[in-house]
Amino acid sequence: MSVDAVKLTSYFGERQRSGGRFVADALIDLYGRNEIAASILLRGTEGFGLKHHLRTDRSLTLSEDLPLTAIAVDRRPRIDAVLGPTLELNRSGLVTLERARLLTGGAGLAIVPGDRPESSKLTVYLGRQERVHRVPAFAAVCDLLHRRGVAGATALLGVDGTARGQRERARFFSRNAEVPMMVIAVGSGDQIGRVLPELGALLRRPLATLERVQVCKRDGQLLAPPGPLPAADGHGMALWRKLMVFSSEAAQHAGQPVHRALVRRLRSAGMSGATTVRGIWGFHGDHAPHGDRLLQLGRHVPAVTIVIDSPERIATAFPIIDELTAEHGLVTAETIPAMRAVAGDRRRGGPRLATHHL
Image (cartoon, rainbow, N blue to C red; front, side):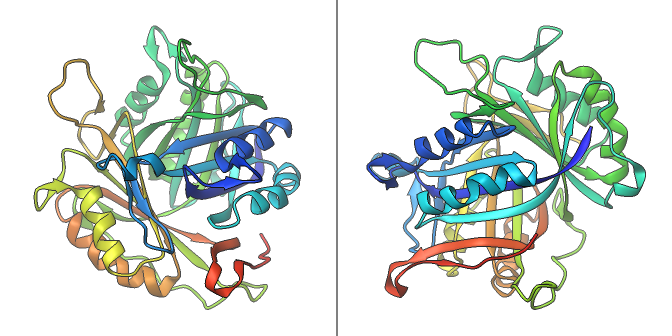
């Protein structure tokens, strides 16, 4: 089954509170009470926001307040029901709305050819201990996508969230079998369309979303920079850009991983914000799927860096990204037609809210 859906994403700090509670707990509680189809809380490794305060896991002090990303996906009426409370909870962070196709079902997991964009981002939602023929489901999904020639895929492990409306939280002394995780894959619309039925047959209870993207770079090769955007959408609201940089901790620039160098360069360039999330498994290009392994010396895991800003600022940021991904990495661009809340600025009297139409 394929239906229109909305993806609601919040970016904020780990120690951020609202009404005496951590925003992270309050948001996932909200999504659990409203039985949101899928939500996931991701703990970043590095990032900064409008105030340019660097949060990183490389410092004992700064690692106490790492960046968090909370994603909720469902049909429009259910997301509308949690949008207002989400904005109230995350008054000093960033909240975005994006269109998506929600895909569910078994072997019938598919989308009609006419709905396939030139390039697609497929996100598959799984449980941490979900398995396929004794193999972790996330590894089985990445392996299938790699065999089918998809440009890249990264598995991200959540720490909290909902799965088909049920709250699933990571806990000590627990198997955490159903703690949510997600695999983000990028490929041509035809590639993704052909692999969907196989994914539906592979997974016991498949749940995925499909979104339109532009592939800007692949394995160091520049395909096309983010194209120009009109000043506003059909409702007169400004359009924004989201760039996603898929890399690996093994890829270095000036002696440090590309994603860490990227965050620092973007921060110095005055960008509004960037967040990096470390993956546990994945691949890009012709490289075989890889990730965390027992007794492995050093880290060879994938990482995803997300940058959201105005088209003008993205045009400034892209040359930096192009330079740092000269040899490795996958870079995609998306248009965000609905920015419902922009990070608050206390100097201007709190959060700036703009009602955009999807």
